[in-house]
Length: 156
Image 1 (cartoon, helix red, strand yellow):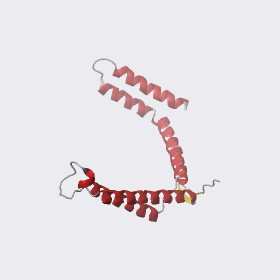
Image 2: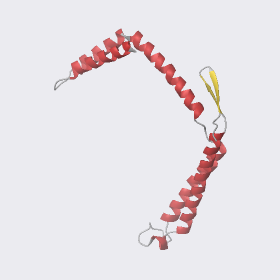
Image 3: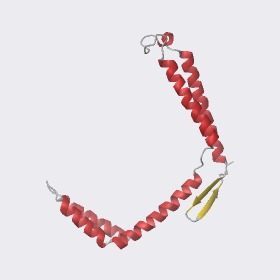
Image 4: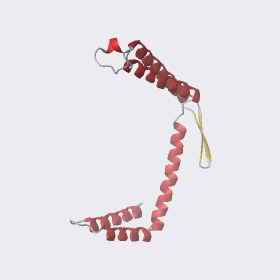
């Protein structure tokens, strides 16, 4: 780790040396930075491989902890929500005269239809919520780099 910090400090010093002044010499800075990275590539590559491996392990653990909603709940809830919102927009914005709502909204627009659309969208949101709650209680199986993880959340 100390070598990694030394390399980063050296790169920072190069950037500061070439980046000062009214007109910084970007071409020389790029050449010097690339030379330094090329000279230290074995150390930097080793650190990079270690970082990639740890990030992959962390990501597979997070996937094991993060449950997914079942498809039937997602499709039903999502369609109800989207259809309800479309119905609400149509009901509140579509008028009997064919123009956009201008003056008295409750008399010109179809407020009952808009309210029904909001109710359907709310029911769709409830289905999505219930599906996500159910998925938190179910077991999760994750296949990662050379391993299989089974997780089950237990709470009381």
